[in-house]
Structures are given as structure tokens and as C-alpha cells.
Image (cartoon, rainbow, N blue to C red; front, side):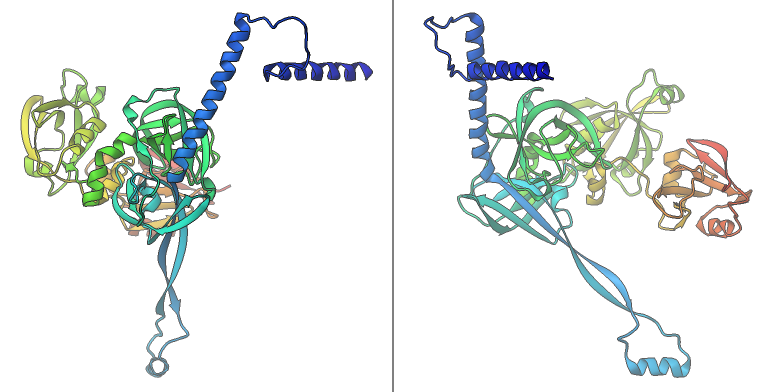
Length: 508
């Protein structure tokens, strides 16, 4: 035991001596002059560099923080509540006397909920950049600006929003407000130091530091697809959305937007929208309130080897039109299902397209009413189709950044934790089912539902028969399952991934 204590004392003494010398304040004096070897010079230089970087960080943060705001949003919604107690007494009398059934009166109760995020001031008169999802559907916006250590509350007004890029501009009435400088996100490099500032979990003016860890071309977050994300290990959490990601010059290079969080909190990977994406549309958002984009009106899929072989292409190229929407520029211009678009010519520039994203990027970069020349392959032959673009509808903009999902029928029914819907032509096209297939599709599976049973079904399975009884729609589905006893077993005849198969289940 004494030996272990002596070892511990010796280790502490050595560490202390090391700390004393590294701090540059030795307490042991000798008659000899300290040697100025290469190692000592290198050590001193490194320490000076570290302190220099620290001071630079502190200065930059002090400059940026006053321009970073906290945003609180209020959402108002109504719930319909039946009311049997406050009806007209004479009405009740006649209902009872003549035998009319008493109908519940409807009342609407209003509720409010709060959300929030961050933002940053980009001009002294109060224009603020943030994420569109931070202010989406808000009925009231409060902006808090920290001035001399005190929060000052402003009422915010949305002057422009763009769901596709998830960028919004909010305006507050102020003068001589602190603001940040917008940098150039095209010049960033992996490994550069970055600073994130925001209000995670409502904790205002929180600063985290990290590096740019990657540049992502496509990232899907909560069903929404983002392009050209900046990835960073600077801690970003809920509430950081809309806050700035800055370089060591104090310039904003990104808008903090999302995190990869399997546990619900920061796990070392955060994402920011490049600031150049905001700069491209900033003036338009302020002047017009929205961004107008070109639109063809087609659903497209990438051309793989199988498609290339079946369509007689010399190589894998272009994008295949899976569906032409009705009353769209594509339909009016003569595009057809099965056409393969290989290039787009607009404003004198020809761009080859080999992925759906490339075609979207080209079309969305153009304005409505612009004319484009599409080179397509139809029946193995190249053709030119001229089309006048329309305007991308706002409801499509909201979902254009999201993974393409077919529109489900409004006729639905829930059973054993599964939600079923009528099979629509749109879903049939997306699943590439035969034209004569009729049935119901598994729209959603609620694994947390207390009535959930593991029937062996997957989302997007199409059921055509149950226990050898046809189910061509939800009404037939409901009639058939009334006779189903899962303790005796149930057999589903389904289409999954284009293949027809039987799935059986019996409750043990």
C-alpha cells in the first residue's frame, strides 16, 4: 500500500513539474541559461499559435453573437368538440315531442402551441435569415435580440419563404441593429474550423465550435431531401435550426438546419445549408415573398441497366418519364410516358441529364414561361420536343425536397395497427403493377398501436385477396375482415415489389 501511495505521489509531482514548465513559469532556478533547442522553440511556437487561435475565436464570437436571435413561434389550431348541454330548450322540446333524434351541436375549441428556433440579422434595419421549417404555419412570431446582455422582444413578420430550399426571411422593426456578413460557401474546405451559434433547447446565445467534416450532395432528413449540405461536428441540437454557421473571419457560410440524431440529441453530425443557396434567392424573397421556378409536370425515374436494355438504349443515360401529369406543360408539349429525356437546352446552353436530380436542378433554375428544348428518346429514336415551362405549384414545392411518395386515397381503414387505403392509379404506376390489378394498399404500419399484430405485411404491399376473397377496394376489405378470425389464421394474396405472393398469419 505504501508503495502504491509513493508511486501516486511521484506521478503527481512529475505532472505538476510538466505543467509548471509548459506554463512558462518555472519555479526552479539554476545558474545555467535555458537551452533554446529546436524542441523548445517548436513548443513555444505551438503554444503561441493555440493562444492566438483562441483569441481569434473569442473575438469572432463576440462580433457574431449580438446578431444571432432566438425565435419563438405560436401555432393556433381548432378542435371540434360535440356539445350536448347548451342547445335551444325549445328545440329539445320539439325533438322529444315529435321523436326527432337529438343531434349534437358542434363547438370549436382553440388551442395554442409553441415552437422555435434561431436566426441571424443580415441588415441593420432588421431582416433576418432562418429556416422555413422554423416559421412554417406560425400564427405569431416573437424575435429576441440580445442587446448589452438584455433580451429585447420584437414582433416578427415573414416577408419571404421558400419550402424547397428551407429558407425564410423574417423582418422586425428596428434601427442600427447588429448584423453579420455573408461569406462564400463555395470556398469552404473540409477541416476548416467553424462556429455554430443558436438557441438549442431554448438556451439562447449558445456557442459550439468544430470543423467542416464533409460536404454532402444529398441528405434526407425526416423525409425531406436537401442538396449540397455542409456537414459539421460542431454541436447542433433542436433549437439551433436557422442559426448561423460561421468561419474564423466571422462570415456566415451556412444556416444550421438538421442533425443526425438516432438518440434524439446531437451525436457528432450536424448539417447546414450553404449560405450561397440563400444569397441566390435572398433578393427575390424580400421583393416577391417567394421564388418562382420552372415546372414540366412529369414524374421521372433514373435509367438503370434494365431500363436501358428494355428500351433499346446504347448505354445507360437520361431519365425515364414514369408519368405525365394532366394539364401540365409536359402534356401540352407532347411528352409521353416512356419517353427518356437525355438533355435540356435553355438560354443557349445544353445540359445532359442522367439523374432525376440533374433534371430537376436544371428546370427549377429556370423561370416560368421560359422555353426549353428537350432531347428525348422515344421508341429507340432521338427527337426534339419544345416546351414552354409552367410555374412550380407551391404544394409541390413543399414536397419536392422530400422523398417521392405516391398520393394515397382519402378512403382509408385501420385494422390491427395497419392503415389501408384504396389502390390508386398513381400508386399502381409507381409500383409498376399490371393495369388490371385491383386492391388495397398498406399505407402505414403503427408498431406502437396497442392493437398491432405482426401480420407479415410491409408498407406499400398491395392486397388483392384475403382468405381467397377479392378485396378490390376498402369497402370490400372491411366486409371481408369482419369474417376473419386471426386465431384460425388469415392468408393474404399480395403484390410486393412487383411479385405476387401469399402471406399467412395466425395468432398464437
